[in-house]
Image (cartoon, rainbow, N blue to C red):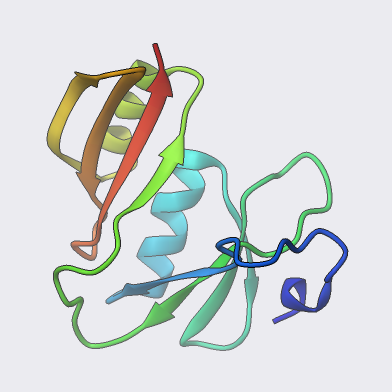
Length: 127
């Protein structure tokens, strides 16, 4: 992975890279690009590295990995938003499905969504 070799911004014991299993790589790339503006580095038909910023060079923060099925459970990935309502709209317009919320919690609001492969992620915003 290209971005994984850049050690200048790495922090000890920090989350460095998250892989999301998907059942349709083309559809997943389109969804995450439309909903959140992510860019991708293609490494063949079964893997794409994730870059989360379009306006400047950015290291990879994760990847989309093709598999036959998505297994439920595991860690929940949360994304940050400066405008939660716009994020809800972007997710639904891109083909995602809100599965919980938006709801308030101490310090902010958040919602959970399922991507087209069935992965559940969350998005939160400060109060």
